[in-house]
Amino acid sequence: MIAEACDLLANVNVGVVGSWGAPRGRDRVGLRIFEQLLGAGAVVHAYSPYELGPGGAPAANGSWTDAVAIGADDRTEHFRSWLRAHPLQAVIFVELDDVSDPFVAVTRLEGVATLGALVWERVFPAQAESYRRLDAVLAPHSAFEAVLRSMAIPAIPFRWGWRPSLPKPPLTEDDQIELLHVAGERGGWARKGTEQVAEAFLRLADQSDLAFRITTVDPFPEELAERLRVAGVHVHEGCLPDARLQARLRGARVSVQPSLWEGIGLPILESLAEGTPVVTTDGPPMSEYIRNKAEGLLVPTRPEEHPELAVPLLQYEVDALVACIPPLTARDLLRHRERKALAGGATRVDPERACRDLASGIRDLVATGAGQP
Image 1: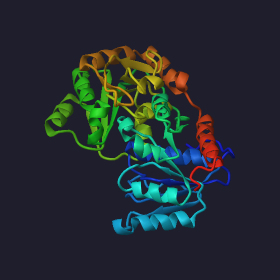
Image 2: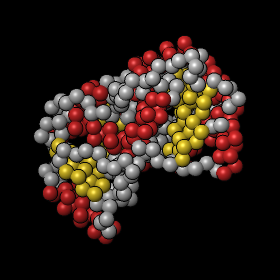
Image 3: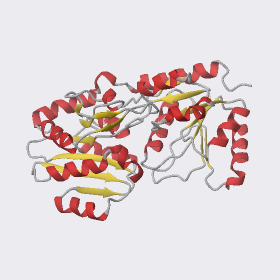
Image 4: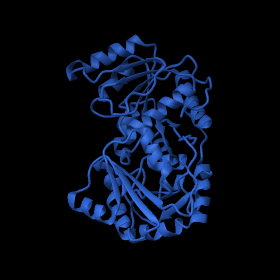
């Protein structure tokens, strides 16, 4: 949902380079960046050398260029032509990879400020040189901000501002309490604790007042999928458009997201936006969003010490996860937690403030002449 308009970036042309339309985290973060830029009055020009997902492209009030058909040999020159066709003051790269790396270099040569969106990289101190070539980095939480500043890399807060998309249905005494886990792509399962969640749901499956759902882009291994099916755990495999994912999170009563590590933890924030309490792990950034026994419950963890990591890698026992769920499902207490989740607690950022923080950072960066030779 676009924040209420402000004029901090009025008449400022901002390019956004990345992929959109898929249910994965970067695409959804890119959409939030779009919304906040538009809410701040910026003229947004989009460029995507990646295939659009089933959700399609977000709105752009400036221009939209889908360059996926451009061959690799011609891609950099095509991007250079796109840059020169628009009076851009800044370009935000949602992706930092082999495709976008030449684009960053071209943008700097053209004298345009460069920004990166730090979404999930936890080993980014080892990638410091990649971020030092940018004028600033959008950081989604305080742990990342601290590490960026320790490396003398300018950080612009990119916080999550939300309003509920629709009112949450009231919980009646006859309703089953649905527990939902959002798994995403298979490559992220270890990060999201997906197999631990599946095991926890299997252990709780005999409780008739509970219902269990896992939504995942990639399928489970055949043996585990069969165990979940027999136990009555509903597994949705395949891409869910943004609106359907919001509906799933709004319809659930408890969001179970016990990540082993996160860069931003989108399902946690999206759950709060729909007034759904969260069971997650006790460590940053998850514990920056969720207070124990307020917006949800925190699973006790053991952090692993790795000095090269921006946030610690967490470990926890499935038994500890299972133990956290029944205390959250008492109906009177659950209704209270739903109100707390929607309020968002101490870290709640309203859409206007999120929009202004991002816009102020970009405006100040442009005002300093960042990117200019």
